[in-house]
Amino acid sequence: MWKRVASLSPLISSKRSSTLNQAAYTFKLFESFTTETPTQGNDGMFFKGKTPFITFVLGGPGSGKGTQCEKIVENFGFTHLSAGDLLRREITSNTEYGAEILDTIKEGKIVPSEVTVKLIRKEMESSDNYKFLIDGFPRSEENRIAFERITEAEPDIVLFFDCPEEEMVKRVLNRNQGRVDDNIDTIRKRLKIFESLNLPVVNYYSKRGKLYKINAVGTADEIFEQVRPVFAAHEELST
Ligand SMILES: Nc1ncnc2c1ncn2[C@@H]1O[C@H](COP(=O)(O)OP(=O)(O)OP(=O)(O)O)[C@@H](O)[C@H]1O
Ligand SMILES: O=c1ccn([C@@H]2O[C@H](COP(=O)(O)O)[C@@H](O)[C@H]2O)c(=O)[nH]1
Ligand SMILES: [Mg+2]
Image 1 (tube, rainbow, N blue to C red):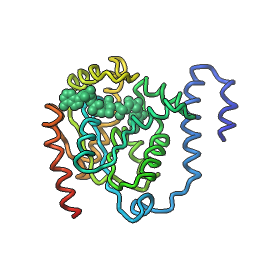
Image 2: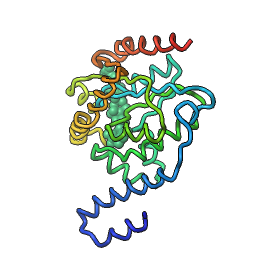
Image 3: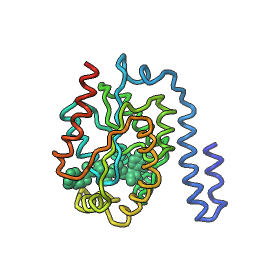
Image 4: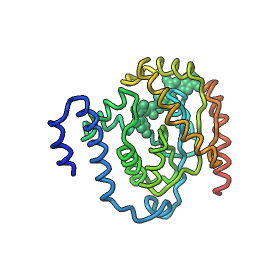
């Protein structure tokens, strides 16, 4: 099927070609997933005897997800999987989809779900830990549904860092880590996508009683004092 899609490309105009190339990129990945047959559920698929404890960490660009994840790791022994970092690693390692991922990130768009879920799943499977922070994912309802379908797992809790737009813009523009998407044009695009595609995911988990909304204004330490009790309570429950 991939061959068939590739052979169509020269026959089409460049604008359509770019759309179709994106479709082919998605399709090829999707095909590689559908040939894999996950045979076990959440408890048995990745984690040698332990039920995984999965936390999704959501919030707009610059809301402080990565900063707070570091503190959660230090204090509660989670493994931090930043979806954005996993995608950026694909770019720097020049893997098969690195170039497409780079273009997608530059545009502030969302990488096809199958790519991201595959990277997350691989990291989970190779970890000795069973407690995961999945940072910056799912970015859309489509991401969420793909994660559930492919991993047969759901998050136990979902953190949402609620931050005003002007504060997020200020933080991202001051971040200074050389990220290709830390410029005002891409930030605006990311904020729009966050509102239209990510907030529905936040609302979904809110309705399901899994959401912990954190006021992300203040110092990182102050914010962590809101985060700490969420994990402390779950630690108590599991002992
Ligand atoms: N509470 C805070 N107050 C001020 N600056 C902060 C705070 N938390 C994080 N920062 C800074 O803001 C910038 C963005 O933070 P961070 O990278 O943690 O956000 P993020 O939500 O992971 O963003 P992205 O979605 O773009 O990856 C960083 O430079 C970080 O040091
Ligand atoms: O699940 C994901 C996560 C990220 N992306 C793309 O990466 C950038 C940067 O993500 P950060 O979480 O801010 O590090 C994001 O704007 C998306 O383009 C993605 O597609 N899917
Ligand atoms: Mg981050």
